[in-house]
Length: 364
Image (tube, rainbow, N blue to C red; front, side, top):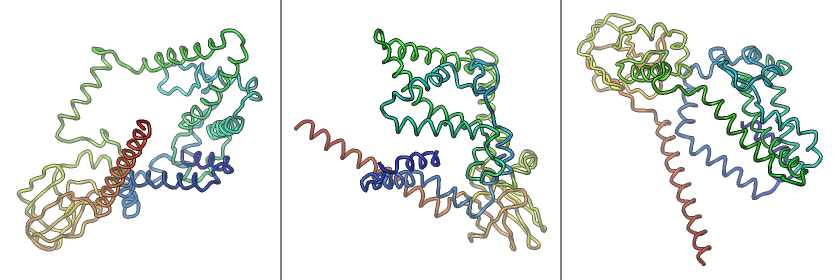
């Protein structure tokens, strides 16, 4: 989306080349970064200091060859939008009708620049959606999309403007009842949308409905959630490649190296405590997937942690004593939360002041 947004700005550089507009763009970008800092900062921290599935193109199925294999074309674009297939890539009746009108409306559009920009971007997206686009040579910046057919969403976004303009222009060419075409179009949109969505809505009492409810309840009432019940894209890369280990692992601390005895372990969500007796340097693997932010203490002193070969939180100990594990978050994570909270307050405050000024102006 960012790539297309920048492309659109470049296409209209003459209008952007204005100090006030540039200032507003920079301001908007900063607001976005500030409000999402609570997510972006920890994400980048984990990117820098660890290996996670989300950043690995091969594990994510986001290589050039992966994207190339998911390309589609005319057959899928103009198929039935009411098909029973799991995935439907059809443009649909309304979009197809609007596209057909393009040759008749193209020369009559009053906002030619915007019309042309959106048409070019729509055609570019269609090109990228096919096997004619060199996905095999494309950089990870593009292949991160994983599935080429996801570009359909961008195409619909761009072509919707084109179709709307086309329909209005053709309607204006009709002297009598010129509103009939837009009205019929809106009715068809609602009808097609309803029938398109209805197929995914299981009726109450049906097997599909009961299956969803039972699945939700099984997760809510389960003491342990399995690896196939979570979004595995955010697992450490090692953990993602050892799903069976996660699935079969007991919810306790393991001694993976050395000789040690563990007693009185008491695990409660993101906190754990245990007593360890060791005869030599030992390595403990705690019952937590490896993420930055865990604090592990031995006899009240912080000890260094790292990732085990299976993607779990690990630490070396050289003495006996009491071990505590607690998720406290990293310094950068907390900084991200503070930045986003302050930013949110500032945005709300600024918006509130703008509304007050506007109200005073209207009352005056």
